[in-house]
Image 1 (spheres, helix red, strand yellow):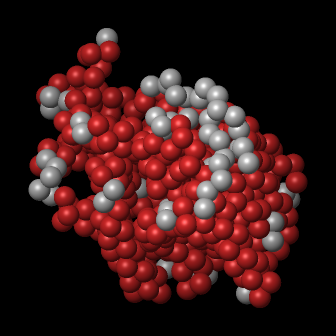
Image 2: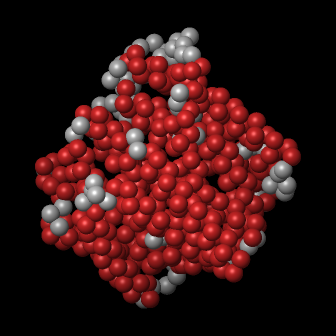
Image 3: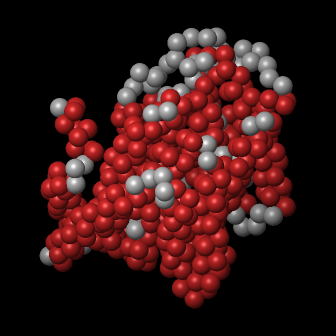
Amino acid sequence: MPFGRPRHREGCEGLSTGKNAAYNVAYRVFSVLLPLVTAPYLSRAVGTHGVGLYSYAWNISYFACLAAMLGLENYGTRAVAAVRDDRKELDRTFSAIWRMQRGVAFSALLLWLVYLLLVADEEKTIALPLTLMSVSCLFNLDWAMMGLENFRPIALRNTAVKLIAAACVFVFIRREEDLWIYGFAWSAATCAGNAMNALSLRRQVSLVKVTRQEALKHLKPCSLLFVSVLATSVYRVMDKVMVGAIAGQDQNGLYENAEKIVYCLSGFISAIGTVMLPKITDLQRKGETARILRSLDGTMQGIMLMTSAMAFGLAAVGERFCILFYGEDFAGSGVLMVPLGFSLMTIGFANVIRTQWILPQGRDRIVVRSVCAGAVVNVIANALLIPSMRAMGAVAGTLLAEFTVPLVQWLHVRRELPYPGLLWHVLSSAAVGAVMFVCVRLVGQLLPLTWIGLALQAAVGIAVAAVLTLALLPASGSPLLRRLCRRH
């Protein structure tokens, strides 16, 4: 049965890596930024308990969706990228993976319904509309579009439907009892975006008949990467579940809003990694190791400069920002955000190594070991620290987990990559961030607690970071500088 007739590829095949990265970064950050736009209104409308309750239901739903999608974002993207120049093989690979996906997603949907009917407690009213999130996994084919380096439609279509969902929040939510509308709006938007993206694939691939064995052969390698996705989510999501269960929903509400800001910023990192994975997979297939190493070095420097500015910037203005953004009741979120922001640097370092060296070579077991080690560290730290430190214990657990991941990666690939040079990018970027931090804090002491004062602090930070970065690049023989010189 044809999914679509063979046609020219639509969208982004002709776009450069930079443009693909721009689309993906913009969409990934927008996906997290849009809830932040609604967060101040929502926080004031439903309070800390309402925010914590919604976070609890949402994160359980998120685990159900993880089970439905297995490791497809990495495995599916890599598999499609490896055969995209062979139309016949592309059609068979796509059809087999999607058949496997539908079976797994349907099973996950059944498990979610069991939870909803037999386990859910006070969060049931919110969890019910979140069923649409599990339904949307049946036809979430973003992995195929990313493997074809077709990022533009994903960004544009999903942005449009989520803007409509955000408008519903301001129109319909007035009190905690209205939180189910919030869940329905975002779930319906996700369904609509996935459906439109799936339909657009008719222009690029055809659905052909494949055997059950062809579909099942993708289950094992995809499940292996799912272990890494699940382990990562343990210390990205389970910490909020544990804070809510151990320290209460008020503490979970504070942690949720602090983590939202950090997660938004980490979207830049994951978006760049997602764009680079199919590109580096193609270079790996061609045996161009020298180009891969140059790309890795340049990307690492850029990511470290970016994440150090984010981390030290959050440390400088986090407390003031949370009071202005969320309200006085969420002042504690700013305290949590200050140390939590430094996880961005280790996240960035690990992402570059994973997406530009380990995954393109198919060495998935290294990814699994590193993130499983991080998950174990996180759960142990949370269990030990949350009872006494409450939400700050989860912050400490996250920092330890995010440091563990690149450490385990280093143990496996230290003889293959120039780690001294990569660590130099970390230290030099941290020095830039530290100077920026001092300047921003000094300026903050002279300014009132207003949005104008915060904007002035941000402007000072950007200016200082820009000047120091421009001074650093020539001194370090920067691959980024060489690229810019070639372009201009």
